[in-house]
Image (cartoon, rainbow, N blue to C red; front, side, top):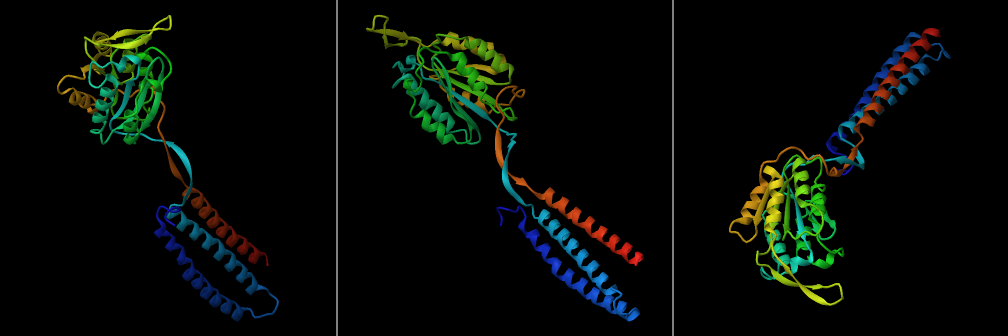
Length: 333
């Protein structure tokens, strides 16, 4: 019952039809006796006309009252999608899973370090919605905006360069994907937490950061690695295996953060208190509403009250019209 009605207690009002019908029956009996006393000539049909009129009005009035009672109870069935305006923080974690993130200049390696860092930050965001974007030669929205933070935690625990097949590193595409993942209905803060070493082989991450900031998105680059870097194996053109010195491109990330203006920041993950700075940025005051993104929707039961209100009005009108018709018939006779 509670699934079909928002306020099922109002259905009890429909029971008022029973005493109302009893009252009308008693009133009809009195009227019939009075009519019979005035005109007892057989075959006049006065009593039959009165009975039909009373019965018709009783039916229409009963249906009208029952419809009103059902409308007050808030009938609802079926579902519809409605745009949802959300409050609070929303953060998109962008995880660079390119080959350079396998460097071991931070323990145990950059990608594992970044995953643990992001997981620790996420565990402190009890009231935030999150999304996760994977960055490599292509960008992939692995987890759309959701309040299910366990899904993000599970993905962090299984990060690997093998999750994406495109070679290289396109940080700009990943940032654009993250900025576009925020619901347009969100009225709170929008933050992109980008975990990367800044090694970019295509795209322009500074231009992407500038565009994201223009949409009201705060972009925080979290640098993973060291300036000294570490060698990683890399296949050469002849099919052999060579090495590539992967270093932290902090200048690239700092320049991208500067391009975002007041909505940009660069944090070295090894600095003391860096996680607190990132949390502060995520929870900070929001700016203008983002212009992009897909609206967030939720399902809700369809309210059927208006239909029952219309039915009640129709039954009341039928009751009135039946009374008018009966009156004209009596005048004609």
